[in-house]
Length: 404
Image (cartoon, rainbow, N blue to C red; front, side, top):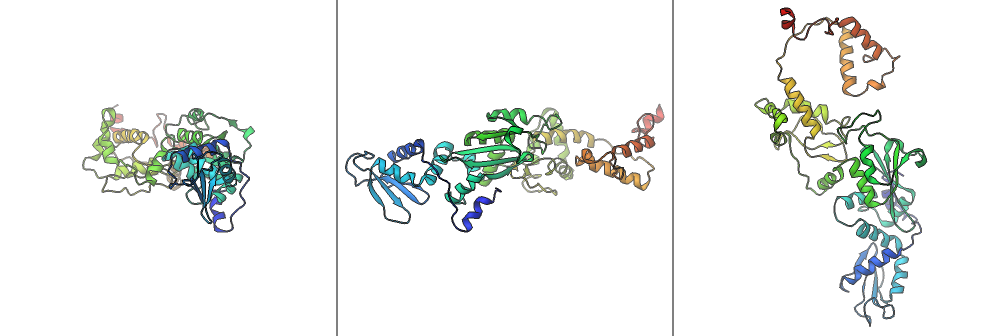
C-alpha cells in the first residue's frame, strides 16, 4: 500500500477495521491514567472518553461499586460502570484504546520519535478506523533510500519493516535479517562496492538487508542510526525550531588546517560557495535538503534539493572539500593551448559530466558512441598524452619544463 492509502479511506465510507483484542497492558494503562485524573477530567479517545464516576458509591474503580463513566461523543453517558463493565466497553472500542496506548504509553514523549512514528501512518490526519484498515495491509513510507512499512497486530501493537527501497517486495528470507537496530551501524559504513561512505546521507546506501519486525522505539532507533539526526532536524523544522548555521558563520568557527577556508571570504563575494553547493549539495550527492545559505541576508543561487529532511549547516564533507578547493583556487591561472577536434572537445565535456554525475558504471563497454566510454577514452589518451602523461604534450608548468 502506498503512503497515501491511509488518507484515501477518509474521503469515502469508513473502511472495515480489523478485529482488535484489548490487551491487559492497555486496559491497565487506562486505569492508571484514570487514577491520576479528576472525575471532571475524562481520558479522551477518538469518539469517546472515560472518567472516574464522581456519583458512584464506594471507592473509585471498585468492581462492585461502579466507579467509572463512559462518555460517547454521539450519545448519552453510561455511568456507574464497574471495572469489568468498563473493560467490556473498552474492548468494544479496542482500536481507539490501543491507538492511544501505542502512542501515549509505548512511544511516550512528545518529540521527534513520536512525531515521526505518527507521520508514518498519518496519525494526525486520518481516523483510527482508516489507519487500522490501512495498517492491516501495511502502510509504506519512504525516508531517504529506506522503505518503512508499518503494520498492526491483532492486539493493536505497531510493527515495522525497515529495508532499502531497492529491496521492496523481496521476501525476508532472501535478505539478511536483523533485530537489533544498532546493527545498522555496520550496514551504513560501505556502499555496494565496499567503499567507505563518509557521508551517511549520500544516496549510496547498500541493500540486501532487512529489519523485518521492529517495535516503535527500535524502528526509530534504526532509522536514526542509518540517517543520524535526520528525524530530529525534520521535527525541529516542523515545529519551526530548526536552527540554521549559514556558510559564513560555520566557516568562521573553523580553525587549524581548516582555517584556510576563511580566506575565501575576503572580498571575493560568494560565487565560490555556489560552486561548493552545486558540487556537494545536489540531490544526486546528498539526500538532505540544504537550508543553509551564504549568510542571513544572502541566498545562494543554486537549488537546495528536494530531500525530506533538512540540512541545517555545511557538513564536515563540505568543509573538508572546501578546504581542498580553497588551496587549489589559490593557484595563479595560466594559459594552455591544445589542439582538439570538435568531437574531442565534446568528448572531454562528456567525460567530465559522466564522472561528476557518477554515470561511468552505466556506460557499456561496447557503446563507443558515448564520449565517456572506456575504450573511446583510452583511445583519446593514447592519441593525446605524451610519455610523461601530459595532455596534448603540454606540461603543467611550461616554464619549469623550459628550464629543464
